Image (cartoon, rainbow, N blue to C red):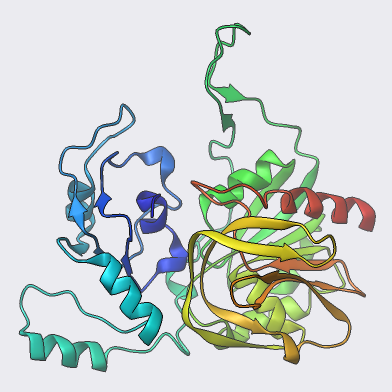
Length: 346
């Protein structure tokens, strides 16, 4: 419904056309600080109405200017609620947006386009070169006159733990959240061998979100398997699904995926329910998981797996996005749990 810039720049949407259910989009423009990666990743954008004149003091350009700059096609004046209902009944579908093809040609082009099943988009979005995260990570807050606050930022804690983060399409706000939780983060390419990661002797290893079919990433499974039991590991979204395969489990394609910022997730250990942000088209088959794993969280809408941990190694993962930008933030505690897991493993 909201957060269009974060969605457009989220690498997990690579290769997909996205439709927004809230009718007006572009009303607060585009600004570099809210980007979730260095460039947009959606292939197309479907909305009800485009706001050509954004109204925000933070805006640096309009949504249409941003799309023109990056040569991304969009379409407006669509009944997005009707389209959403159609996708919910028929499932996620292949599609085409075109100014050149006839209706019949567009339908055929959509039918001829590749399926998401078996698709590896990680190769397209992973960092070509390793780097240390030093982006702006301070928490922004509203200045308070009563406390004589002089800045809009809260100072960061000391970087207590060194971790290596595999970039399968990592969002900037995950890296920000890790730094806010006391981690020094080195980001590495998706094809980095396990031996190279272990040679860095990190305190822990993080597996990021990303696009495509997790079952197609066998070359990643092979490396991550070698890391389990060697270092504490935390995975989010695609990282969670990769761990599923490393445990010997399976994933399957959901009918229309989980998208948006209002998904209820239950912690089976405590009974607590969190409202979460989600963006994934595949899920873990809980019946395929081995006995030494425990399902810790489930989605209350369809009972699918939302969290898993190993009972013999310091490894856990969640399907949803605890770093959600623009929110909600109910599940942000998982970054603290990762720090606790590392501390307990020392």
